[in-house]
Image (cartoon, rainbow, N blue to C red; front, side, top):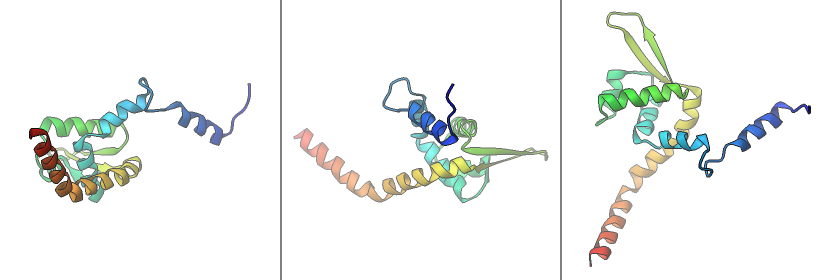
Length: 134
């Protein structure tokens, strides 16, 4: 049996995932991460750790069910941490992890791109709609 170095093992592991392949588990992760709620929650938690109610107020329009579901998924994937303090009532604080910070760098650019390019998208949509309805 051949011995491999840590760098060789990492390279082998990296090559095992290819999102273009139908059965690749990274596809499921991409689907989860492409949610607008993931983007907005990571951006909100990047600023500072927050409690559930703070996140609910900051991320306008997110339902209680979706907020809970997204926070659980992010925690399960290691992107955020959940700290529970034994107070009355119980205090739960969410914070972004180091892994979450690395993803935040990507989604922050996506969020900024969407915010700054909406006028161009609106124009393109109007042009398209005018051309297809004529």
